[in-house]
Image 1 (cartoon, one colour):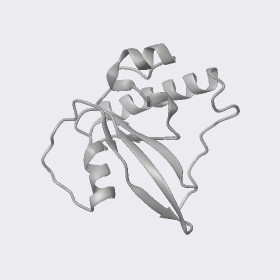
Image 2: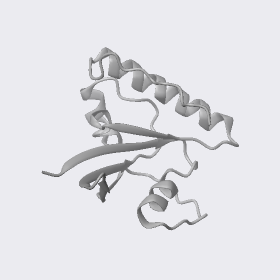
Image 3: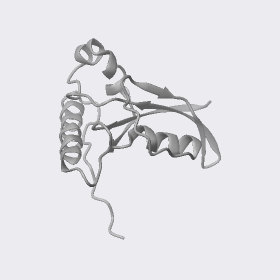
Image 4: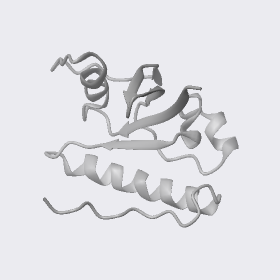
Length: 131
């Protein structure tokens, strides 16, 4: 049986979310910025540890806030499926402090809604190892 993992890519406008996804999937890069205006879904398969896994990569345009409940998630077409992913990739521009503040806020909202809903009991971010 092939397992499926859903991954959401979030970040402020113009930070390169779609470029990162395209680099990962197709090994191509374009420095032309084309703003993402609607959610895009990519469906690659990957091999990890000798097993095939399906990925669902959801590339989201900037969102004003992380949806706090299912009703809010489905009321905004852009946010549909955002609360049910397995992982979030938060992208920011190292030259733009505002884009870092944006992902900091989204990260906090993800943590608050996920722990309140009991989705990830005891979940916490661990610091990256040095080196």
